[in-house]
Length: 154
Image (cartoon, rainbow, N blue to C red):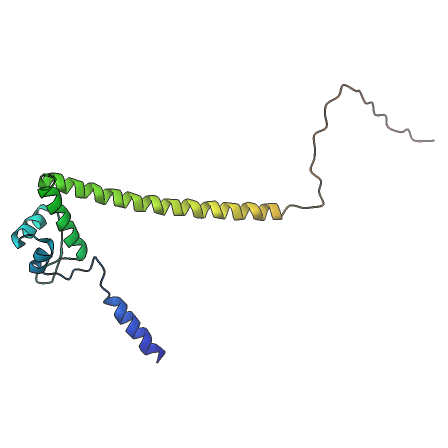
């Protein structure tokens, strides 16, 4: 019975839809984005939106692709930005997202290293011998001390 549950859960997990799952054919993507299918093909050729491809080379758009198409349309029509400018904006946004992910990764690594260092420091402090007294430097004086060894008595 447990084996069946595991198979079902892994089967379900393999077919979960995310916003990056390519499910929309070009006609549906065109309707959802409010653009003509030929415009979607042009954007694909220019590299503005890169949908996944099926084995037969058909385009499959994800929810993220649809959102990107809407953003391209808004920048083009409302802001008056040309397609080359839009492509550069998209590239820069992708670069910023990648850099933010890298910063988060490095911050996590630094936090982990700081925690490990504090743990190691605590281990070192715990290993100190408690029967030893710390040496404190004696103040310098100008007194002269003469040492004379005892003479053996004959």
